[in-house]
Length: 631
Image (tube, one colour):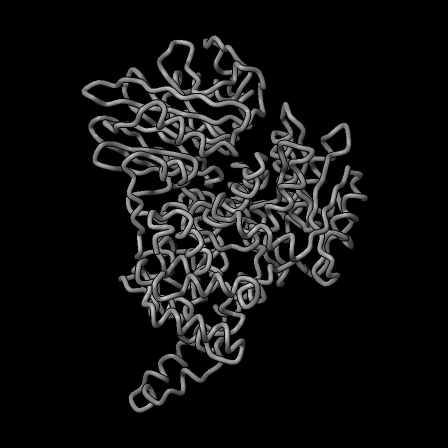
């Protein structure tokens, strides 16, 4: 787990400037750093830089940029290849100088070319420069666990693990891509291909980008929809047989992620996914696994007690940190330093706190991320199943209120919100994105520039008729890599902590596609097969309970200690200089939110997420935009 950056082209970047860009990633790799620039020809150059968090082969032999034994290939690598030992056994003709997975990538590339990436099972983002081909390859793992951004200018391409490196690149202007702001304000994050800046993209998950003097070429080596369509419902056995096979696959995935030359532990919330991962880890460890939980003093929100019971049952070496609202509030000031583009999932705050706790004793932590998306665990999946059953009735309602004489009477707008959502969900290509349309309409009215539809266009590719499956696929392509994995990566790397996700193992993900949907959702029971595997390790009574969770009190903060800052960000002078929002409309909206509470339409607590997204954007804007301090 590290930080990488670099460039290719005729960019006028000195070694010192590249080193400065690299040092913005210090928190991702405090153990070592390296910078190299290579001449390409015709005025082109390739630059590679690396910040190292040493996990495997802690010796200087793991230093990067790492050069292959024949000097042909050079790599900067962020992540872990969990099956690197098996791959290394196939590379007997290569003379290894280290025990690192980084060198295995180099050796695999020399033998199989860039298609070697199809053999890797892990989380990774890397830049590899082939000095013979004079080509730079950028590669990102299948699900987008590790970040990789790139900026393309007339002079060439710059890449980095985080935006702050690109923002520190000479010549970068940082113009905001305003057409995406409605989607950001509505959803709270950017998709795993977009960014806040014009001309800056994220390399899509499962993608290779080749850069050379003649131009760029991008292709997918692994695609969620393609793999789902190729594998769906191919498992022909019983659920008992599927349970056995899934248990074996999960065991292999966890065991691979226990390989480390530094202390290792797990995050444990007491829920199904983290408990299952922890249980398998403990079953494959000769000593108690270290486990970490966050607790809250409010009993109705505290899951730490459940986590402690699971830890006691499994015999782990458990640690818990009880935090207050003030502890969480203290994290707000740091958000834009580590989430260096607008990101408004407030659960980032408790995520940072549990990462801080874990880093005091370990350098690697396993998590349960991915269980909800791949095994049907979110509540909105149940809501969509109900909506699909009511779809015909919704169409009748929609058609009725479009009849002449009824359409303009304003009756439809007075119907309950849920009825409006079901009735309005008519777009044939967007069946599973009916939520948040009111917030998106609000955003469009506040923003001065033309906006893209807030709904994610990925759904247009889907032919799956089951709305639950359709939404799961959409979440795998958007919410998981754009929100959940970004949240975990930045929260953990703030403290130089590596997080590994066994449920996002390639074999686990692909096996989930083979399963009949009723193995995942049956009679309203979410994550059916995953739960049945978990019961092998943890008694059912310890896991089967209502999920409590702790919500960050956004409404209380925005109307309380953050109110002055929110109003400053909504002042006429601030908004006129910014020239993104309509000042009068934005001011009225915020004043209505602050004054009317939950009594006015569009101003209640259900809009706190929207206002929080606006607040985070403005806080980010003040932190990173060039006119800071001049208003």
